[in-house]
Amino acid sequence: MAAPTLLLLAACQSEPEVGTTLYPTNADSYEPVAYIDNHAYLPKNMQSNMFIQKGNSPELDTEGCELKFKVHLTAVSDKDLTFNVKLDNSKIPATYAESHEVANADAFKIENGTVTVKAGKMESEEAFDIVLDEASKTLQDLAEDKKLMAAFTLESPTDVKLSDKYNTYCWEVNKEIFWINPKGTSEGLQQIDVNTYDVNCGGYGNIGTVLSNGKEDDHFEYYVSEHPAGFMKIDLRQPTDVRAIQFTPTSLISGRDVLSKFFMKEIIIYGSTVDKDIYRVTADDVVRLGVATCPKMPESPNDKWDVVFYSSQKVRHIWVRIVSGFSSNSAYLSELKLYK
Image 1 (cartoon, rainbow, N blue to C red):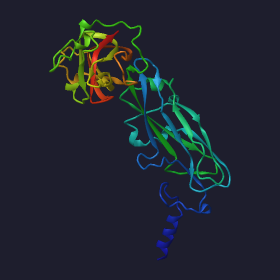
Image 2 (image 1 turned 180 degrees about the vertical axis):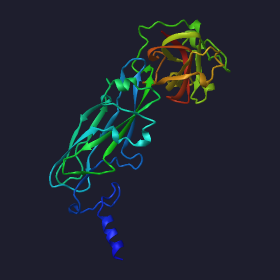
Image 3 (image 1 turned 60 degrees about the horizontal axis):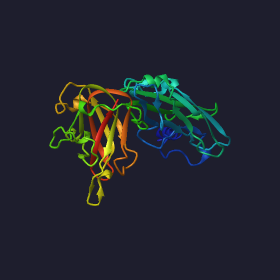
Image 4 (image 1 turned 90 degrees about the horizontal axis):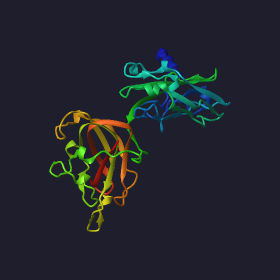
């Protein structure tokens, strides 16, 4: 029985796994071991973010793309312990080697690279703070269908041991190109002749002129829908440079309801240059150009909504999917104008 007892004692004296209840509550039982813990089992010490590139420009929107984490100890120390963070992509798990590109150092800015665990404490008061660099060539050149991976690890005082298993935080980032400028306006742009395009606003799937006749009390109703058959569809008849779409609510009053409040809130816009008639275009022919959210519920036809692209889009077909409405599952429009 002696041999198994010795093995049991040896096992109990090895470093317990972070995230279990095996770490002792008595601080004198172990020397402190430093580790990283995002308090999640899956994914453990990993974060994913998406940043935005504004059309064809090199301008990036990295708002909200921030990695923050603290240093934890398995036991308190009788002195302050200071740690630094560093990029160490050799720590990237092998499972991501083929599916991800390795992020260069220029992709990041370290806003806070040093933290201290005070004597008698189990974690640092401050967190490491790392953000994406909007001027990064690495991020600008990243293909939209690719993902980057970076690994950040700790540099510890020489007399402090790092957990072998939990000393790395991985950050996965990818890019989506947004063609829609949420702050854009049609002011200064040239309106495209309404006689050069068709819109499915004729009822029963027909092409109509309701949205181009200049009458604010006329209207056509579109519905919240996930199926292409329910989308607004515009056929410019030939590839055309389009910079903005302007939607005008109706002035029509039905009972006590002013129908201008029945308006689209969130939409997804698709585009295509395929040489097909309006009703022969399929979902395989279009690409998503972006998502737009109306900033406020309109009160009258004066509250027109401009959806503006960062740069002109050469399209023959435009699809508009209504994702949500302000007051119902439908939207009443009186006018649709395109600008270049």
